[in-house]
Length: 316
Image (cartoon, rainbow, N blue to C red; front, side, top):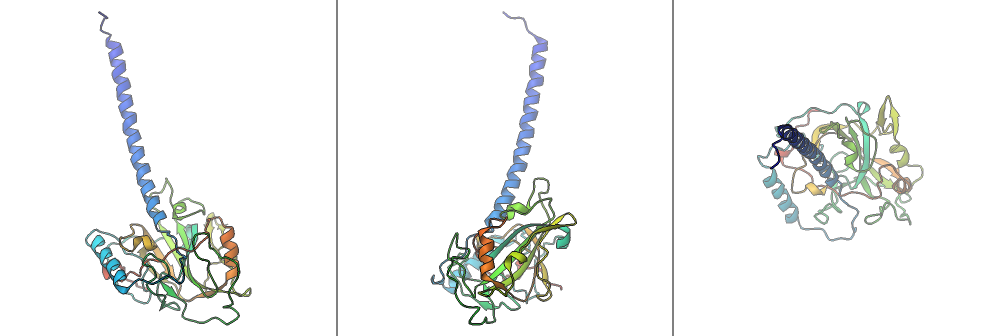
């Protein structure tokens, strides 16, 4: 029989403790990583393909009503914060969840630029309903109330931003989202670029600008509009329009049709301009072909949020 080695036993116990500690630390790390991955997954799910077939049949009103009812059922009493998009001409809202307004964009990092086919918000120069669409975010939302000239409406022959759906065309309305984050991040693809391991709950701000596409080289150049540079240590889009009316600011969430029947848990400070900018469609085409965000198509539109319990009050 081998002699009982007390020292060896103690050493093994120490090693076992170290192993258990490592396992505990690994579990904690995995939980943090999993939580961060979940947040990124939520962010990514907000960007869903739009640009569907223009001739697609619109769903009946009852389909949208059922989606609104599902949203009510899935959020009632669950503690979700205020949601987006909304009618920026209506100030009422009774959501009781509050959070701090994100700093001005000059004190945040621009992390993503993308756009949706048709305006997600309603108000100002974009109150004309595009219809119910396919019930999944395509061919719904709101369009420019005004009219372009015959020359500006001349169709383009190239496939504009058509990587994942039908091409954009002259006369189309887009809602552009300039997304900013308080995290130490750089511009990149998807809303995942706005999150960082070091900042699990960054302040998020979205500057919303609705545009209408014109076949007009004298119209605004989208590449200039979406230019990215660094100012005082922060990534910025310095050419976000400042002459499109007084922005409507409110507390809301991320958007996209993935949230037609459930709430977005991400908190966003919104600033939406009520006037529409006329942009050269050819410049949008060039931007889709080459941009740091790897954006090559328009995204879908979430149903307008109308339930007061899911809206914050607008005070400005």
